Length: 92
Image 1 (tube, helix red, strand yellow):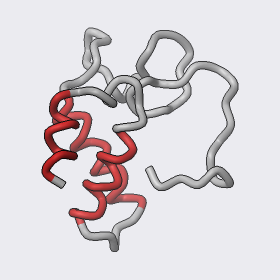
Image 2 (cartoon, rainbow, N blue to C red):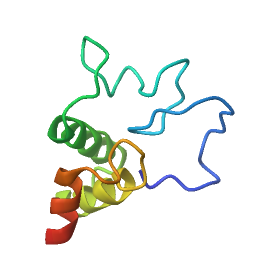
Image 3 (cartoon, rainbow, N blue to C red):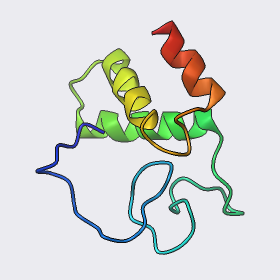
Image 4 (tube, rainbow, N blue to C red):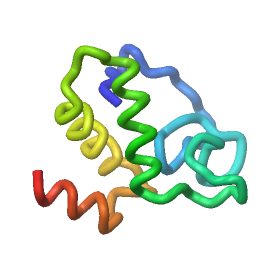
């Protein structure tokens, strides 16, 4: 979530509207969907993205990781106007 343009892997195809990962087809990647192919609930996706960021930056405080994750999710089509994201960012 703190990937710089120099670190980004360029992919010309479609990207997941939830996390930005490359996808072969459909709006979401396999990591952002449930068994039926539906987008995971906001809270589940948020916690999984926070967990991923925590593994990438283990020394960062959770509060910082959560703020970075919310900022990133706000740029993604699946979440940018989601009520849970808007409520969390209004508090911050």
